[in-house]
Amino acid sequence: MKFRIAALALACALAASCGASDAWGTSGGFELVDMPESRALVVIKEALLDHGYSVETNAWTVDVGWASPLLVDLRASGTSFGIEWVSAEDQSWYGSDVPPPAPHGQLRIVSGRDFSDHAQVLLLHASSYQYRARDGREGQVELEFRIRQDVRDFVSFARGR
Image (cartoon, rainbow, N blue to C red; front, top):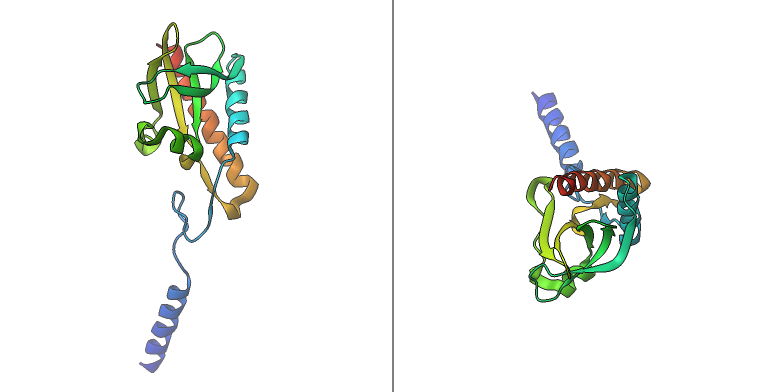
């Protein structure tokens, strides 16, 4: 009987020292790191190039109904669609006008008008593309893959309109 109590006490002590689970999407006690905006924009540009588009940078202003027009980071040349990487600075600048990330990994697309036509802009929130610092380059590669997938899905959507 004493052996069982001692074994149970040891098991409880070991379980208590294990800490929180480290599931994806939670920090699990580990620091989360944002994908650097400069790297994210390179990945987005590469993804658009992979789909046959040349890319314009910071050359497109779209009225999406916010207090200030949206200066879109990247536009697929000759199209009515672009992609905005919503950094912490962008969030601060546009404030509550920026809709939150869509739930369950869905794409957040806003519609508007540029000087002559209807426009679609994919909002990629930097806060949705974080990796655990301890994962280093592997975590960043995984996020780059997700960004490419999101761009691919958006391009498919935009082409279908």
